[in-house]
Amino acid sequence: MIRPTGFGRDDQAAQTNSFMNTPTETVECVRERAMAEFDALATALSEAGVSVLVFEDDLGLPDSVFPNNWISFHQPKDADANPMIVTYPMLAESRRKERRAEILDAVAKFTHSSPDHLDLSGLEAGDDFLEGTGSLVLDRVNNTAYACISGRTTEDALDAWADETQYQTVRFHCADADGNPVYHTNVVLSIGQYLAVACLDSITDPDEYELVESSLKATGRSVMLISLAQIANFCGNILELQSKDAKPIFAMSQTAYEHFTDAQREQIEALGTIVHIPIPTIEYVAGGSVRCMIAELGISG
Image (cartoon, rainbow, N blue to C red):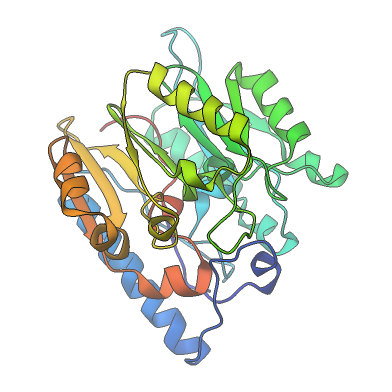
């Protein structure tokens, strides 16, 4: 997780993210609120037993609070193989400085490993983009990646990633309630160990709807359907984590928590502990929520 010392509205990112809004408070006020929201979430996750690595944003970048867009971590199924770190091509030039080699080094040290590094950032030169686990919702068990195609998730970049990682891909197109293209897959879909949360109504092509639905059901997971109104309140932007004692933790914002129905909350709570923290400034200004704030390592400890 990256502490957002330079948090603010990123006008370049806003061109493709309809969830972003212009703040009315001062830059300093917005930044202070965002850092307080971040600190509350990091603390709550730590108190729930999740190992949390926090890095300061030394460059003062507006969207650095969302590291999952530029980096992902992959643990090998083969015990003799190396883990992998992937760094990604990002659409907004303003965000490319978020990629930091020292974070890769720190993660390698934390995990006592020497990960292979797959750097796809060079695809930016050809206007091909893939923004980490914003663009990709991973079923790590079945080696399947779900990807909503958009300006931030292009077919060629997805092909390049799949060729290197040997993941199968499920591709589709989505729009929000106002007909705007959905900028990231993790707004409409979350996949945990036993539960997938999905807004299938956002999928604009009937054949793609059927493809995603059948693919999710084939995994044996329960599929919780959420509405277009719920994705506008970040119910799709949640993440299942694991505590140090291997207990499931569902991380989400207070906004998302309040917009799940009682029955949906009960279904999630039957599977694990919900950690829900209010982050209204980060959601309103930057157009992302809790899942975007976490680049999961895929390990416990």
